[in-house]
Length: 306
Ligand code: CP
Image (cartoon, rainbow, N blue to C red; front, top):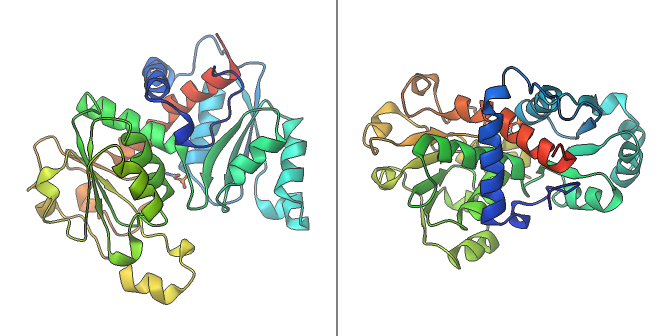
């Protein structure tokens, strides 16, 4: 079931499969900083191809692979590869397919990972495709909620910020809709969650949309904050209208539930000031570090150590 499987969209995973990944990630936790003693992927090579900037996703995949004993091939900067000569994604994938056992791909075009999976025999893992999906971020986000709050069912999760372009929001809200949760979408009019995603979610669970974070903070177990993604706006003037629209302050969090947690996929800009970092609600650095056990679990499952 998992062997050689592509991880392109979170929609390809059932609730049982999501929970299987979280369970496996929990088992990987003790090895996340020391490395797995059996080095189960010692004969494997994992390739990372990033056509967009990344710190967490690329390095945590590379670290996870190394912690499992695999070796890592990285395309490196696009200027130093044949992408700079105009090589197509499909040709690049055909080549890397024969150099590696799995391909981790980030690309600015929605659908790029699905396309790559059609040209590769080895599994392709979507590390973010434009404003599309970021399924492994979703799995580490769900792992964080599960570990911090004990369960996912019964929780209220509020997404705030750039819900239009935020692929982490698109993936996570879709996955959460498979559980018994309530979702709140908090954004300015210009950055509302795309209608097709909202419609899909509303078939399964209640959803509330608002511009006003103040009015719903008391209802939340999780406040999932996102960066307003300047680079995705076709017109910089449109970005300027909404830049800095939500800033999380201690006074806001003090009105929240006792066990409220604040998450953010990072990087942040100004939406979470440093004064929040040492509050008990702040879980975003823990969330980023959960990328290691979760990505170890995924690599181990699809590259088949057992
Ligand atoms: N959360 C996330 O995808 O971070 P990077 O862009 O640094 O990979």
